[in-house]
Image 1 (cartoon, rainbow, N blue to C red):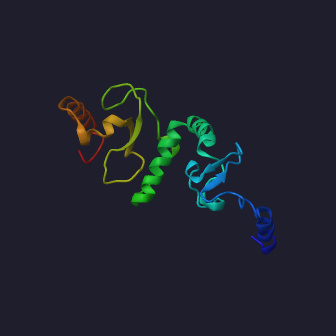
Image 2: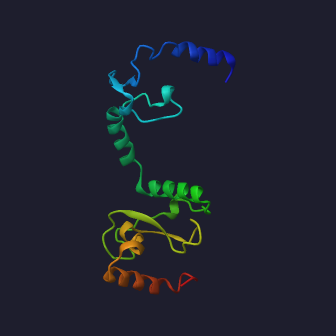
Image 3: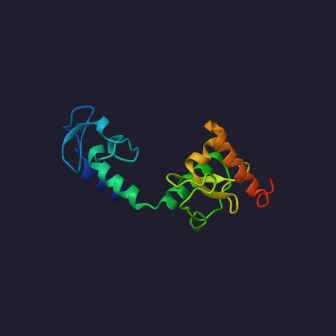
Amino acid sequence: MSLATERMIEARWAGYGSNWPDGYRECTKCSELKPTADFHKHAKCRGGYNSVCKSCRQPLSQANYKATAKELRLYNAAKNRAAQKGREFSIELSDIVIPKVCPVLGTPMVSPSLDRIDSRKGYVKGNVRVISKRANTLKNDATVAEMKLVLADLIRLAGVCEIL
């Protein structure tokens, strides 16, 4: 950014918010003066807080969330987890197909979850599938009946996956 551009931006924002009491900010959408606790923190915004209050942002955030396909949300979450944990990530959005029924439990798919078949590998083709969140968390708190369903699925996969 050039020096002239920086000065122009500084001049535009000069005095902005100088009449606000400490700990308060004006929402640019509803024009109400609200405590900073009513705004999401945002390091790149002036003052360290978003310019739109939480209550004005909520309907827009909900609409954006609903408009985003579940496959894309699963893909992005997996990509972020892989980056954070240093795991390989080479799948594409087209590799994520959400079935109507959980392939492990045989129940209707309510909360899809991306499963790594071999947890030692990353998110690579052939090592991921979409199962229900319940099936993916069975390791923690499964009942005997649910574990039998998981066992039946592992036996079925034995011919597909080399670790089984």
